[in-house]
Image (cartoon, rainbow, N blue to C red; front, top):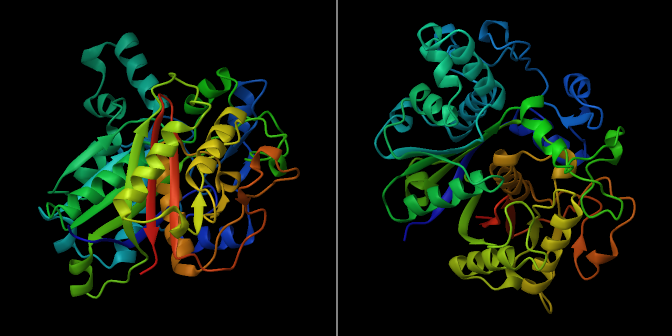
Length: 418
């Protein structure tokens, strides 16, 4: 089995639009949550979101969209893009630069792409409305493409001329974690040398409001109070958008070209709750099995894990299920430090696994563990779990990143310092 390392990172997120900006926000505990006027205008409850700064999408016409000056997308490319693909392209371009990959390493059969997104609910609505009101004959081909749930996959493979394996994943909030684990396996088996792993989501009322209907989102109006995983007074999560790209590479291939390494992917595990369409199994048994499977895959004991970036979204049911899972796996002297960076970023849905994996790689490389921010009163259910209410400047050696999604999909990823 080949060893797999992470050699490049790229971020477009609520807490920064570059690796350096995200690192600074994590160190300072700077939140990306703010009042979102478009969201507030569309409902009477949820007002906050993890907004992505520097990008605007005022209409469905891509010629009206604006980006930061360093994001360069041609008019021809814009025709088939959706907002999450714009975020993903910017993140992937940063990851390519960060990994020092030239075209000869990006567009070759030995390099593939696994990505994850729920699609653009907004652009799907626009496309369907066009077909129903204007008619199929007067609806353009680019409009049809933007309405497809796999539009991210279609656009990224074309934009970067991907010649290797490529798949778009859809397993709710575990999607990009599934993508990363599966990409790791391809490299381990020697089927690819390099894999791009990308998670991306819109930050638009159309993909936020359905969760408001489920009463899953916080109704706080003060960004300092939401979301707050593990707090006894938490009242739900807040959604964010953006894109995160990671470059996974065969360790020997990376060494041969002198690549800088953030972390090694030691292993991963997955398991299902088999419990409910939306609610997690209260016992946390599915996530516990995923973590145990990851430890077995990495050939590590629970005591080897120094830090866990928890899935913890700030819903009572979700947080309690994860706490139960952690207590069942990490017993005795195995007491890793735990935090949920969703308190700062918001919940990225399909993006979350990639975003938090990227954060874990930064923590390993830079030698710190980010705090679980905004906690005012720790839930008594956290007893026995070492929740980080402040940043820890102790360098972790091995970290775990958890992701769980609707339908009871659970993934645990393990990374180590090199």
